[in-house]
Image (cartoon, rainbow, N blue to C red; front, side, top):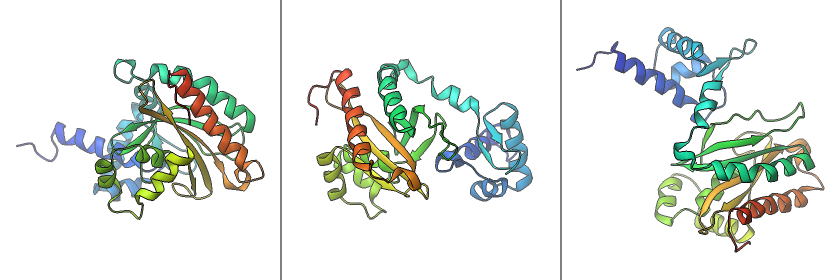
Length: 246
């Protein structure tokens, strides 16, 4: 039987701390301690070790902790280069969308009940959401997650949304319109547009996300932003060999 101070338990604790960031970009020591049920001293010790290996980093001013560069490096090493073609083909279209509006563009894939960010083109504006490769977020919050849910088989989808107010009509509209929109769902003041990317077999392979702060994102160009996001996702799908474009 493994003791509470065994090497195995130490690894489990480290993983529990890393998993705290599945739904949060930044956390304080006390928040991590509360989420993991670890004492502050134990959490601090493990966090310090993870920091030394760059799995976690700490903002020197706010003292908030976030995922480090090592996580981003690992996230690019997906098995068998499965998404290399998707990332390569998507980049020029993501860059074009970013240059037109100077807002954040992200590429997500499905990872269980989460969406995983595998490529980003960031805004150069001072007011922007900080994006990190390898971030994972629940599907039930945000535009990209809802696109994944829309194309999920009904039984699996119901299991994910059973404790929410979401229903099939929401997802039918997403498929019909070719995009999902979220306003302040995952982060207050953030607006997101997301559109599906299909592979040559007509299967959903990824989701293109375009987002920015509502104070400037929601304006007279909003319809253009939606149409341009759909077009970029459609162009990526076409380049992947998908022939039936919405």
